[in-house]
Length: 84
Length: 148
Image (cartoon, rainbow over all chains, first blue to last red; front, side, top):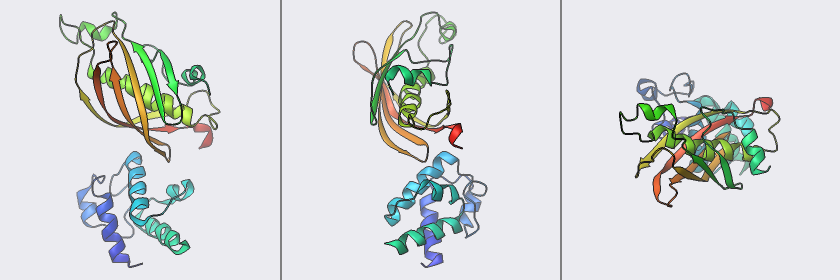
């Protein structure tokens, strides 16, 4: 997966939920959804549901719990897509 | 889990219990009722000399029926502790009619999704005449502590 393209796609997904616009502008692999983007845990669920829809995958509870930053999201999506 | 058992798991008590009874519940939808007692303290100040039920309390009825009761029902197989933790996380409600002291209201909710402990529902509230009082979308998180 193209890392730059993935981060751009993720930026669009998190945009409606991110409170910290500066962190959103500088989003990168190490950006943390809760601590950097200031997304609350309820909206993080919507981020995960939007990721599922975008990539046509199903994310499990334990994967959701690990999906706390951009890198983790990319790893999980990549693994899911390779299973297809 | 029966409708009566669901109520026993609710984390609310008077003066902030805003559901009297459930009329129906399954995995997808729930209907519950509440009567706004005329002696609720809020009527003394909302409004001066003209008591009207605050919109936040109408929202609360829909949240306690549509999010708390339905959430408890959905988690029924894993609920071990008596009282799960709940938190309302978003409200988007339109109001159409006032509710006076003493009125009975009926709240209905239909699940949009329940994933990762977040429940999102389409909700509506009706008065005794069956007229729409308010409707919209509510979401909340429910955490069954024994599973953490």
